[in-house]
Image 1: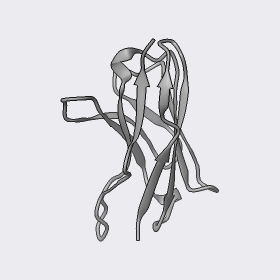
Image 2 (image 1 turned 90 degrees about the horizontal axis):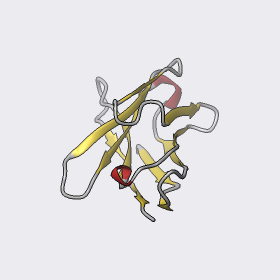
Image 3 (image 1 turned 120 degrees about the vertical axis):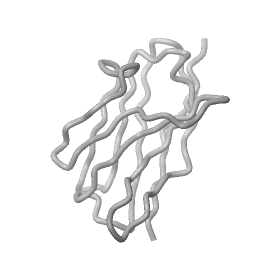
Length: 117
Protein backbone atom coordinates (compact mmCIF):
# COMPACT_ATOMS: atom_id res chain seq x y z
CA UNK A 1 0.00 0.00 0.00
CA UNK A 2 1.44 3.32 -1.10
CA UNK A 3 1.62 5.96 1.63
CA UNK A 4 2.83 9.55 1.54
CA UNK A 5 2.89 11.39 4.87
CA UNK A 6 3.72 15.09 4.96
CA UNK A 7 4.87 17.06 7.97
CA UNK A 8 6.63 20.28 8.84
CA UNK A 9 3.92 22.82 8.16
CA UNK A 10 3.01 25.58 10.57
CA UNK A 11 2.71 29.31 11.13
CA UNK A 12 5.63 31.49 10.06
CA UNK A 13 6.14 35.22 9.63
CA UNK A 14 6.76 36.74 6.20
CA UNK A 15 10.41 36.31 5.27
CA UNK A 16 10.72 33.20 7.38
CA UNK A 17 11.54 29.61 6.43
CA UNK A 18 10.03 26.15 6.79
CA UNK A 19 11.12 22.71 5.65
CA UNK A 20 8.46 20.21 4.72
CA UNK A 21 9.02 16.45 4.73
CA UNK A 22 7.17 13.64 2.99
CA UNK A 23 7.90 10.14 4.24
CA UNK A 24 6.94 7.50 1.70
CA UNK A 25 6.37 3.76 1.68
CA UNK A 26 4.86 1.06 -0.50
CA UNK A 27 6.88 1.72 -3.65
CA UNK A 28 10.50 2.02 -4.77
CA UNK A 29 11.14 5.66 -3.92
CA UNK A 30 14.49 5.93 -5.70
CA UNK A 31 12.82 4.91 -8.98
CA UNK A 32 10.22 7.66 -8.89
CA UNK A 33 10.22 11.31 -9.74
CA UNK A 34 8.35 13.21 -7.03
CA UNK A 35 6.54 16.53 -6.79
CA UNK A 36 5.04 19.05 -4.43
CA UNK A 37 1.72 20.75 -5.06
CA UNK A 38 -0.27 23.22 -3.00
CA UNK A 39 -3.83 24.39 -2.69
CA UNK A 40 -4.49 27.94 -1.60
CA UNK A 41 -7.86 28.78 -0.09
CA UNK A 42 -10.58 28.89 -2.72
CA UNK A 43 -8.34 27.74 -5.56
CA UNK A 44 -7.43 24.58 -7.40
CA UNK A 45 -4.41 22.55 -6.44
CA UNK A 46 -1.36 23.95 -8.22
CA UNK A 47 2.07 22.65 -9.12
CA UNK A 48 5.04 23.80 -7.01
CA UNK A 49 8.12 21.70 -7.79
CA UNK A 50 9.42 18.38 -9.14
CA UNK A 51 12.58 16.41 -8.50
CA UNK A 52 13.91 13.87 -10.98
CA UNK A 53 15.52 10.51 -10.25
CA UNK A 54 18.92 12.16 -10.54
CA UNK A 55 17.99 14.90 -8.09
CA UNK A 56 17.41 17.77 -10.51
CA UNK A 57 14.72 20.20 -9.39
CA UNK A 58 12.16 22.12 -11.40
CA UNK A 59 10.02 24.91 -10.00
CA UNK A 60 7.01 26.99 -10.81
CA UNK A 61 8.01 30.58 -11.43
CA UNK A 62 6.49 31.99 -8.26
CA UNK A 63 8.74 29.90 -6.00
CA UNK A 64 11.93 29.61 -8.10
CA UNK A 65 14.91 30.98 -6.18
CA UNK A 66 13.10 30.66 -2.83
CA UNK A 67 12.15 26.98 -2.57
CA UNK A 68 14.45 23.95 -2.84
CA UNK A 69 13.18 20.44 -3.48
CA UNK A 70 15.39 17.54 -2.41
CA UNK A 71 15.24 13.84 -1.68
CA UNK A 72 16.90 11.26 0.56
CA UNK A 73 16.60 7.90 -1.15
CA UNK A 74 18.03 6.06 1.86
CA UNK A 75 15.19 7.43 4.02
CA UNK A 76 12.50 7.30 1.28
CA UNK A 77 11.81 10.94 2.05
CA UNK A 78 11.05 13.99 -0.05
CA UNK A 79 11.71 17.52 1.20
CA UNK A 80 10.71 21.05 0.34
CA UNK A 81 12.76 23.82 1.90
CA UNK A 82 10.87 27.11 1.70
CA UNK A 83 12.70 30.40 2.23
CA UNK A 84 11.67 34.05 2.15
CA UNK A 85 8.08 32.99 2.58
CA UNK A 86 5.28 35.32 1.52
CA UNK A 87 1.64 35.49 2.58
CA UNK A 88 0.77 34.26 -0.93
CA UNK A 89 2.57 30.98 -0.07
CA UNK A 90 -0.13 30.20 2.49
CA UNK A 91 -1.63 26.89 1.41
CA UNK A 92 -1.97 23.21 2.11
CA UNK A 93 1.09 21.51 0.63
CA UNK A 94 0.84 18.02 -0.84
CA UNK A 95 3.44 15.42 -1.74
CA UNK A 96 2.74 13.64 -5.04
CA UNK A 97 4.02 10.56 -6.82
CA UNK A 98 2.92 10.45 -10.44
CA UNK A 99 1.19 7.41 -11.90
CA UNK A 100 3.20 4.80 -13.78
CA UNK A 101 2.17 1.74 -15.80
CA UNK A 102 0.57 -0.46 -13.20
CA UNK A 103 0.54 2.10 -10.38
CA UNK A 104 -1.99 4.82 -9.70
CA UNK A 105 -0.80 8.32 -8.82
CA UNK A 106 -0.57 8.92 -5.09
CA UNK A 107 -1.11 11.94 -2.85
CA UNK A 108 -0.40 12.67 0.78
CA UNK A 109 -2.96 14.16 3.14
CA UNK A 110 -1.30 17.58 3.06
CA UNK A 111 0.31 19.88 5.60
CA UNK A 112 -0.85 23.44 6.27
CA UNK A 113 1.56 26.33 5.83
CA UNK A 114 0.42 29.75 7.02
CA UNK A 115 2.52 32.85 6.39
CA UNK A 116 1.29 35.74 8.47
CA UNK A 117 2.52 38.45 10.80
